[in-house]
Image (cartoon, rainbow, N blue to C red; front, side, top):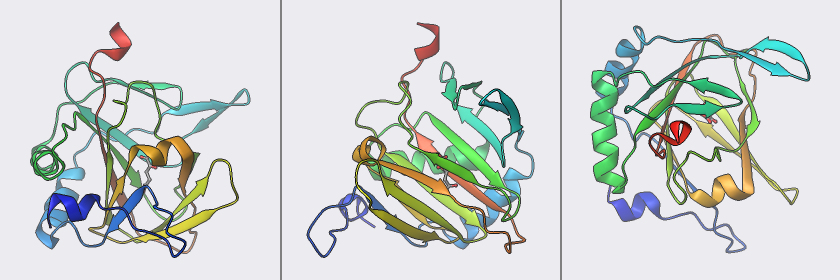
Length: 205
Ligand SMILES: O=C(O)CCC(=O)C(=O)O
């Protein structure tokens, strides 16, 4: 697929342009299989978050792979960069060519089953490079991805299947929030990879 068609945002019937693009089946079956197998050895963690004074384990597992100096302060937690695994690094190179943008970090979320989830948020941390794309890729169980506008009562739901890509334009983080709701009947797991561009050494300045 050409870079232009990947970036072209969809128009709604009222001609509003939405700042994301869903590309079904971006990853080949082989890529999905290799990444899934590689993920079996990722150093997943479940850090503890403090919400209203109470401590909670995050309802999923996560790992952060990034270049040196690209530590990430995410939901109040500093996550340190782990070195890039082989197939994630190859995928990063493919995305850098496709989108003509450097991606120096990837957050891997592992939802062990439909109980695991992610709450409403925007990927708008100050260490993210202004104007950069966030590329999300899904492998495993199909899950709904919800999007809501920050100011008006507008919502969208995108069913993300294995191999799908979601290109998030900068305006998505500025004006919208997203979440991955619980789906208690889903018994199988899902990996989500979000490739990001961070300002190196932001937290050491
Ligand atoms: O799992 C997903 O599709 C969402 C992940 C997400 O929102 C994030 O990494 O910020």
